[in-house]
Every structure is written in structure tokens, then in C-alpha cells.
Image 1 (cartoon, protein in one colour):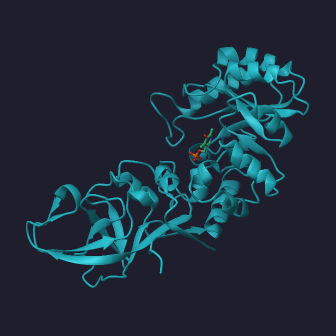
Image 2: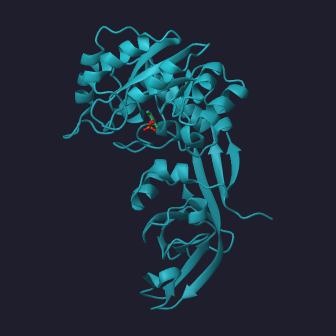
Image 3: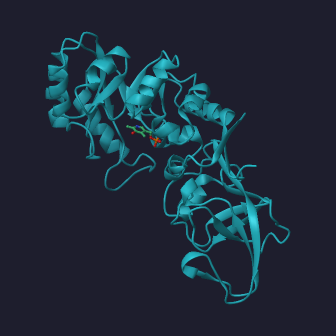
Length: 359
Ligand SMILES: *Cc1c(COP(=O)(O)O)cnc(C)c1O
């Protein structure tokens, strides 16, 4: 016997989503972004799904090494670079490329005296003001890198703040591109620019490499829905009703008694809570599917359970199938109701749900 909560990961959907990237930006090479355990989908599973990618990009050096150990021979890129000098010989040995975003990293690189070459992606801050050198500092950083004998290939990288918008009043893709282009004009080397939003909404951007994350997993970065972009959900989280409760008018449900029945009603208790990764902040009305029928969350999300309104599903009973998100209920819809994004729900899937694979 096992708890009925299951996250099924659809490898074929992931392959399909990668093919959407290919057909959207056919001339670009693809870094499949597999940070955070492939957005909760499992690193090794993603390697099988994304064998056609041109490289893997991620944040965690341990996972990057693991990719090499399981036989991935194509490029690997650390998007947040390295943090400490002791990482550098490891990155060189495993041929893991990395972003360089600040002078302190270049100081460490200069001192490292590496015996093997490294490839770096010099990151420009084109207005997001998170990581990277300002356009005015970029040339100097590049000159420093070029003088380091064991720095081999240098690529040029930036990250868009609002790529899921056609235009943005505070900082548009066009403005970030303008800054990037004017500071990299004439430089030899690969350009590494677009995330999912830029691939989907700005496919004409000239770039050698793209960096899709969320779209590979069937979520949308914003703009249209994932389905409208032709993406298929890779993660479906399902559970079952484990008890029903018939409650009278004025009766409250769960912790804090935040929901009170206006009429007599039937409540379904579902085996899934915030310890599984279901967002505790999800409010009353957050969509849930029971037996194929859309209904709503009522009462507070607890650690191991949620409670749902069974009024639209009168024949639901213990054992009835419940979809929390995925096929039949876009993760973005649940995320929006909970005041967050599909990214967070995927990444927050905990170790507790059973994981199965499907094709
Ligand atoms: C996470 C990340 C991406 C992927 O972004 P999506 O919106 O998931 O496509 C791309 N580039 C960098 C630098 C990232 O950190």
C-alpha cells in the first residue's frame, strides 16, 4: 500500500517541447536548462528526454559533474558561474563552461593557474541589474579574460528581464538587445541570449544559443497559455479522495476555520499538502479536478491534505481521482490562483510524492 499521491513525468511531452524550441528557433543551438533538478522533473530523466539538446545549462556544480559521470559529452554551462577558487580546477577537468559576471570571479580565475582550458560566458548586465558587467565595464572585463592563457572560448551572454512581454515600459527586450549589441559589436564568439519568453515571443533575436527552461517542461513564461504555444505538460500531479465529509450550514473546515459552508455540502479530503509541494497560500477557489470535473479548493491547505468542494461531483467517493495540476489542469492556472508561477510549483515538488514516468 502506498499513499496515492503520484507525480507522473511525461518524457514524450518533454521531447515534444524540445522540438517546439527547435522549430521556433531552428538556427540556434539549445542549452536545455536543467537547474533545480530539472525544474523538479529529475536530472537523469531529463537527460533521457533532452538527448537532442546541444548542451545542458544549470546552476549546481554537483549536478554538472553528475552529468559528465553518466556520460553526457556535449557542452555543460553553469549559469551562475562559480563561487570559490577551489571549483575552478574541477570545472576545467570536467570541461564545464561557466558564466563570469563580476571582477571578483576574474580575480580568482587569474590566480587559478589552471592546467586545462576553460570556456567562459561573459555576462552583461543590460538592465536587469542582477548579474553581469555593465556595458561600460564589459570591454575591460573581456580584455582581462583574454589575457588569461587557460581561458579558451569566450561567449557573450545576457538575460532578459521581461521577455514574456511583447514590450515593457520599464525595460523592453528591444532595449536590452540594443545595449547588448552595441557593446558586443564586432566581437568574435558565440552569443547566448534567449530564455523561454524570448524564444516564444521574440524568436527573431539573433543568437547562437538559446536557454529554454520552463517551456521544456510544458509551462508558459507568460504571454499566452502553454497550450497556445503548442507545449505539453510534463508533470502531472494526481492523488485521490481519502475521505468525504457531509457538513451542515455554518460548519467550518480545517485549520483556522477559514471556510464556512453557506449550505449543507460535501467536502473531499485529498492526500496532498504543502509538505508535498502544494502551495500553502493557495486560496479558496484554486482549481482542482475530481473525476474529470473541475472544482475548487476550500479551507486552508495543510501539511498533508487539502479539502475540496464536491458539489459539482456528487458521485465522488473515497478513491476518486484528483488532479492537482498537469494534464487536464494547466500548472499555470493553479499557480496563478495561488499568486505564484508554474516555475515555483514545479521546483517545489517535494521528495514525498511518488514519481512515475510515462511516455
Ligand atoms: C533559469 C534560467 C533560464 C531559463 O529560463 P526560463 O524562463 O525557464 O526559460 C535561462 N537563463 C538563465 C540565466 C537562467 O537562470
